[in-house]
Image (tube, rainbow, N blue to C red; front, side):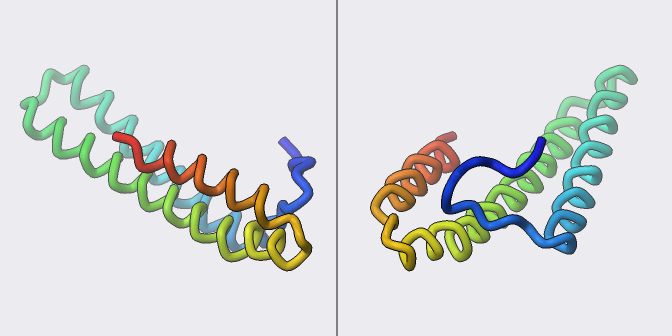
Length: 100
C-alpha cells in the first residue's frame, strides 16, 4: 500500500508509523493469546477480559489516527480551502468509529 491519492493526505512520519506498527503488533500478539486461550478451553471470563483489553487497545489506536487526521489532514484541507469536503469526510468516519 502506498500513499493515498486523497488531496488532503499528509504522510505519516517514520516515527508515527513505527509507533503505530509497534502498537498493532502488540495487539496482534494479544489476539493470538486469546486464540490460544480458546484452544486451551480457558475460563470464559478470563477470555472476555482479554477481548476487552484488545478492544480498548484498538480504540486507542483509532483515536490516535483520528486525532492525527484531524490535526494534519483536515486542518491542511481547511487552510487550502477544501475544508467542507474534509469535514464531511471526518464526520462520516467519526460516526463509523463511534458506533458500537
